[in-house]
Length: 309
Image 1 (spheres, one colour):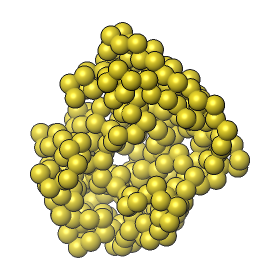
Image 2 (cartoon, rainbow, N blue to C red):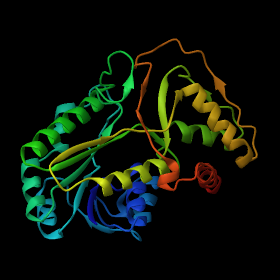
Image 3 (cartoon, rainbow, N blue to C red):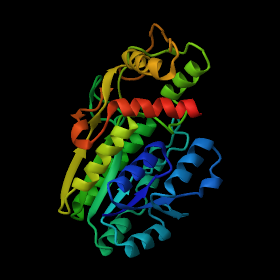
Image 4 (cartoon, rainbow, N blue to C red):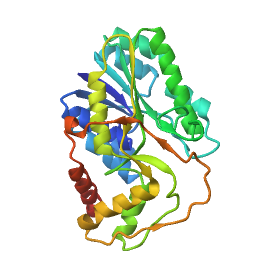
């Protein structure tokens, strides 16, 4: 298939593009900048790593004139909208409504352009931290203004896709981890272990859903390939290690000890504050064997990535 994908330079976007290409699809990736123009090294490396597996298109943004022209002329089978407005997404002052408007900019025109190019299929990326997604506690609220923006985006796409007779797939991401991720939790653990330090887990009681990004990418590629070309709505919430953050931290330490040849000790602190819902996980078990995913090899790849720096 010919696939147009936004958000390719993100952590998950990088893996999605590579897995789609490995499955034999022709991927055109919309990138806001050229690799050398990204200020942070990890994103620059991801953008550089895409050049051999996809056709990059620079400068276009979802819904703008260049993007609409690309859709009309490209003959794409599927539009994979993985990009999202994430500017200051951790801030409590994040503009959820403005971000959702950016995520769905000119959506009716995008749908018209997509259809004129011969396609009726869209795959939208969602988040487990949107209100109403997955399973968990406290009535499944939005985790943050960013989570709220993702829910608004999803509802907008679902309305217009249904109105205009498109096939819409929603792929909901939990907590991915692995090579080329931003310096978040697992990167923090790995960095400290390699420096001979003992990191701590501040929120061991929270139950979350951490998934190897390589497994997530294989599930994504299969989901995209399986989306029908008829008016339809489909959703997948792939589950990884759905367990407490303390249990996941100990799992990671156990897997890394023999691979790093280090003690990989960790301190599990006593958690007393719970500003977020205690439990939020995805609900769809993915068949690793059918997807051709090797769990041990994924742990090997993660260790190798951090050892090489």
